[in-house]
Length: 238
Image 1: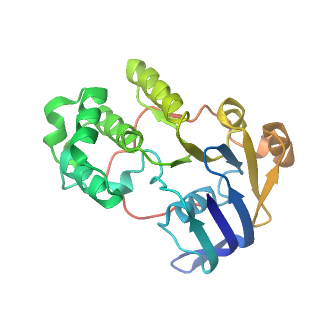
Image 2: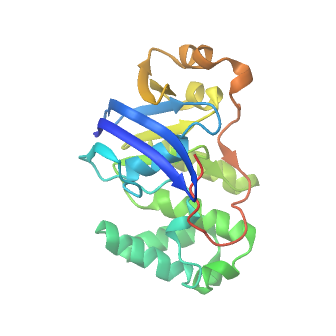
């Protein structure tokens, strides 16, 4: 369960302020595939980071009673100066897991071989993408947080990644924040929208889409070919 209780959040960047939530209340049930739809630049990433604990509410509380992932393929959880192996070992210790089987899974699944012992910032785009997507799904979280992109990579790896997601959906919950109605229609059974600084539950993906209109949304399949170059700079888009 992830519960938002009277959550207020305003994003502050230099002299600019962007209100995202004001008195938002919602319960996201465990073991469910939940989609949260909103137009671009309406606070989706902020909501995802509130779910994971990266951000805290200005007022109110976000209560987590399950083991929640970092956002899938989030480069911000990897230190560019550490190797892939060192990053994975650190994440496993943070979340209380033995790193040995998880690192072995990542090596087998990605096929990146000796590159796992290179500094993360020196990996090429394909290696970085494979490592970031696989590392999140390799850890047995109870709830996975998806911010737009649920699978990534190219060719055979992308197909493997989609099958891995389907496998994880058999034993864990997913919370997806997105501007894409297609992503909700493909995967989700529960539906919310971000509107008027609130989290509102609706009955279907079609109702969520109609609430905003197609012209305000950005449809897509939740697929990312490559993770962007460069290290995370802690700028949080809304």
